[in-house]
Length: 205
Image (cartoon, rainbow, N blue to C red; front, side, top):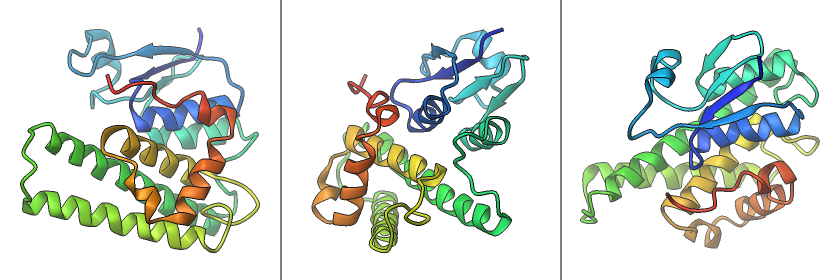
């Protein structure tokens, strides 16, 4: 059978996997999922009801973007996106988790904005403080090196953070580029890659 990626066109977590699949030059079929009305066949293979879900050629089903990313890197290691040395891999996973956390906070902020209640609330303040704090951490790290883990190679940590920032641009605004120069330059540079350019969401629907 053919590899399948269940996704939503706007999902930053699904985009993360699409970039990795493109970089590894793996053939697969995209299946879009209506997250407002999830089909039964999707819920049968995704107990958590979230995208992305990856189905391998042998029928193996994997959900959660980090689990999928690790599987792809271990099974198809060229090019690799996780370091092989245990300590370096741990460092990569830590930065990947920060990128995922940034994405989760941005999604929650967007959901809060859907209520059209723009009055300050404790939860809104908490989300915005967390987002700005993470942006500062990433910006400081990128002042030291070309990528989040050094000058030699981008990793899944860069991919994850890039996708979260792309979602921020889509759902909230692009004002962060005015304050975080290192992050902006890194973001723009990575968007020169075909795998990144080809996965940019075209609209907000």
